[in-house]
Image 1: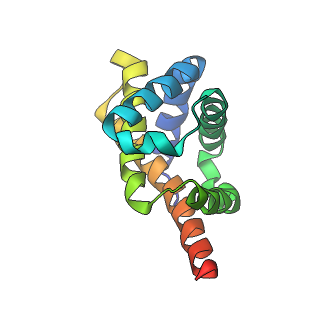
Image 2: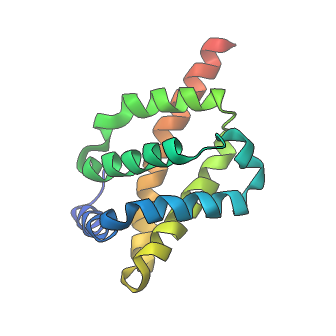
Amino acid sequence: MAFTDEQINRLGSSFQLIEPRLDSVVSVFYTKLFETAPALRASFPSDMSGQRGHMNAALKLVAKNITNLENLAEPLRQMGARHIEYGAQEAQFPVVRDVMVASLADVAGYAWTPQLSADWGAALDAVSSYMIEGMREAQAKAA
């Protein structure tokens, strides 16, 4: 998915705003995710420190590569394939997206806008689409 220059600028600016508080974003995200979808808690380790680090790094990687997300296509497909082992399902991706956007908005506070929610939702949908491709490919190979 290609993003417009305006979207790229907004995503970049908003990431600069939240990057110093990325640990808070990730913490809020997992709290909200397990409140929204309690059944997902069983898919994660009891000690979430490593998982929080992975999510933090993933957000940085996506934000820094938003101008050419296709560069991350193969690693994202591989990540999607690995998520099958964790019990991930395609239907969960919109929930994760919505919770992440809400978490970004909570941490950003007054600086957040509906347009940023739409931009981040589109970026996370693009990431999800590659991950889902990887899941489908892995499932097809296993069948």
